[in-house]
Image (cartoon, rainbow, N blue to C red; front, top):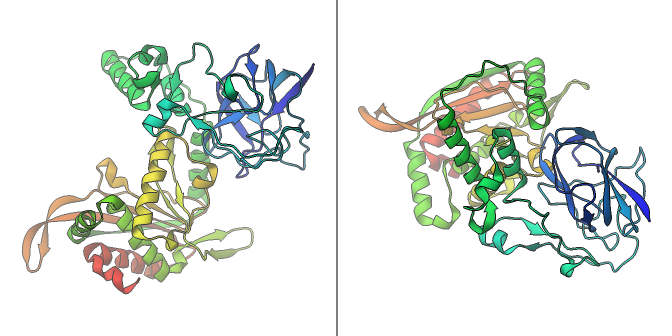
Amino acid sequence: MSEQVFRLPDLGEGLTEAEIIEWQVAEGDEVVVDQHVVVVETAKATVEVPCPYAGTVHTLHGAVGDVVEVGKPLISVAGDATASPQPPTADEPVADELAGAGQYREEEQAGSGAVLVGYGTAEGPRRRRRGRRTPAAAGSGSAATVSEAPGAPNGGRVPAQPGAVRVISPIVRRLAREHGVELAALADAAPGGIVRRSQVEDAVRANTRAGAPRATGDDLRIPLRGIRKTIADKLTTSRREIPDATTWVDVDATGLMDAKDALRALRPEAGIGVLALVARITIAGLSRYPDLNASVDVDRAEIVRHGRIHLGFAAQSPRGLVVPVIHDAHERSTSELAAALRDLTERAREGTLSPAELSGGTFTLNNYGVFGVDGSTPIINHPEAAMLGIGRITDKPWAHEGTLALRKVTQLSFTFDHRVCDGGVAGGFLRFVADCVEAPTTLLAEL
């Protein structure tokens, strides 16, 4: 019998620490190779971490809410070593990127199915295998899986922890915990026994109605951790380093709405919406005004004009504001942009975006119209050089073809780093976008 210490692996994207959100095992539990043992939250994603060892959980090195540095002990497992790790060193990362909740690298360096660099089984056949969907997950479209491991009982399936309430994703547990919702109370009414985010949100609203008005008089201190800390740091850096300026224009978006309706009728399966069309227009505008697809290298006193367009867009999630990125957006069709926007938005709400999908943007699109507001002067997503915003599209009286008519009107606002360009470039870009919104056929000259 020996004790194996599993350390917090390198989660990629330069992340150096993670907060423990939920232990999925307890001391004394039996675990198998590749079983998810803990949910952690980094500055960019919520991740279920698999353990490369089998045996009995001897020690959990940390409590829920603790922040653990990469390379520090996470869990100790006592038993015959199913996996033979190569201990991490200071110069060698212990893992490649763990992407999203429960998605991780499948490169087989040994018999383990969820190998982390520096860990893995020393014996056993080299093969690739995929986790199998549970029946409930398959029916709901969830990406939840049941892990399998070589030599594990019950056909290699990792059983659910006794008494544990099944949820659709780790973010559901976090949402319930933050609002004091008992998951067990919702389980009986949950389809297939799996509690979903919508049920937790309904319970939160019900509790709010029942408790209002209520004032305790006590201050509430909320630790600035995870994504909230990342957002705070990035916005502070942006405001401190970037001399930004904002310009805006009201536009007649009736033509844009007509184009959206026509595309929906022609290609209903593509689901092309307003944001996809604005993204298409934005990409064309950046191709014409490449100064804005840039960043500033302060250390080298250089403006870096990026050769590829990685389009980020602001999305609200249970963890706060995130900016998923459509990499190489300039190479995608409008239908492909629409599909990417839907996919990334859905996974942002579920909390399953990988760190790579939240990094590397060169320009950000912000649709604050979804909040029912007309305009905004947002803080630039550092280290980018500009952000385009679109407000709500609403009926307003508008001078059209010499008469006063009721038209679909919106406001476009453009915030830019004055170091990369002057007002002429910024105004030219915004005017180009406005012209395309008013007459989408203008895009044909750019394609």
